[in-house]
Image 1 (tube, rainbow, N blue to C red):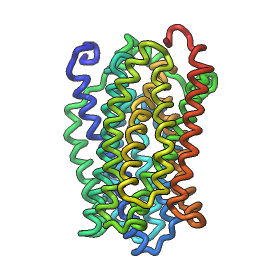
Image 2 (cartoon, helix red, strand yellow):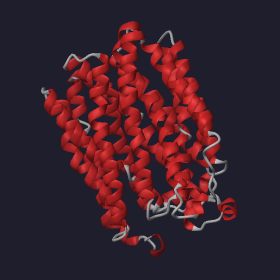
Image 3 (cartoon, rainbow, N blue to C red):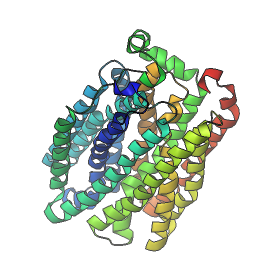
Image 4 (tube, rainbow, N blue to C red):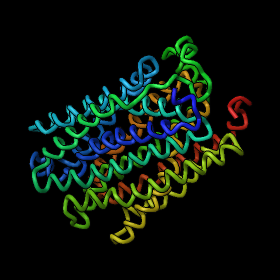
Length: 418
């Protein structure tokens, strides 16, 4: 098997193939935010209703995540990845049929259900090709697809929307995802579970945890809970900027839909790509010296990013806004590169898919699910800029959690986890 050979090129080819799948995962979900002004005008939607469109995706995505993770630990991950890709791509295309707010709300929620299988399956599969020596770098490289997909979804949805109408944005992105699924069907190979840690497939089948056992495992693993709490906070901030920044730029600086979508994503996401690669490399090196190395890099990311989140909503200058977006994106990438690698340091291989599913549930249901609607509601009385700036407080909470984890609980890790 390719995974058995540490020097095999195929383990990096896997990262490349899944990179494109994650690209469409994020391009499809980001597209709607760039056409908010068109939806607002055509259907007479309020900021609260627009916030609900962002939240509906996150709620279904988060609620489905633990079940998706449990399923991923019991089926071929290749089937979960490609099946999910086809499902969310078809739903993305179907969004173009929407005639009113209820239709949009339904399709956004359905897309969240389709996409929820992807990350538990993909990060579990990648981790069976990459052991502790290269895991953060592999997952960090895979994470860059999130940023490129977000840029593409933001810019091209706005560009297509302003020239051909918002419906064609969903038709184009969904159709391309379907084609990709057929291409990858013959290229992606399922590895043995735990292959990178000499954890056999037969042992994995015998020892897979039922959901209740997984909950007990997580409840008795403080570091896992801390990492999930930090992800909830960081995802709240990320979704605030991703969902509301295009409209913020359109309203405050009077940019076109395409330029608002591009400006809201390109600077932060390109910087996040650099930060993700840097954060993955730093975490792998620091992990060799201390078991809390990955968490230290994550704490640096959110604490250093908080001032720039505040600046994003307060500045009246496009130049300073771009500086803030670049700086926030760089530190966000350092955090993102280690989201799952940190958790995989403290949970066994047999529970990785389920743990990633619970991670997504907490982060998206509690963080991503609340962010669009909370900011939409707060902005009605404070203005959108002030509501965005307040998200910096949530970043500081994430940093505090990670510091507590490093100082108090990392020293208690069993020797085998170090």
